[in-house]
Length: 129
Image (cartoon, rainbow, N blue to C red; front, side, top):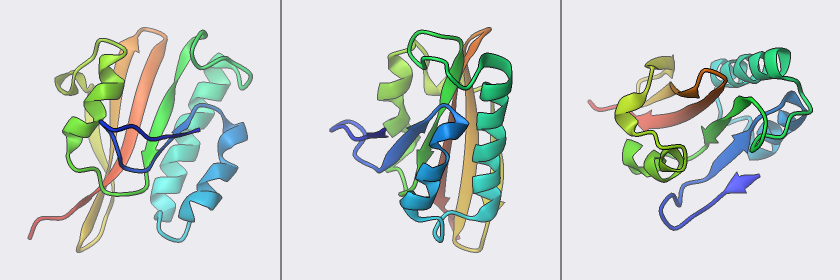
């Protein structure tokens, strides 16, 4: 479930059903703010409600969420995953700040692959001073 690649070396976990939410605890729940966990749970519950908890992420409708637990080098590190779906960084439907402290900002980005498939990317960044 954890995806690691040379093009995207940061720790990232692919989640597509609520059955996988216990993964968050193993990822270090103490380092992931509660508001971020709540956003993950909310997003995944939408996938399960509308597309079914038993769906095959690669063959069925719905989509998945990528949760970065380390700081990505840049948003460009998302491109290898997005390219598999013929989408670019500029295609994000929206970017939302879901948690902010003095030093870290957590973002959520939504990419619509089709009318029935989406990728949500949640990641932290260091806040510029």
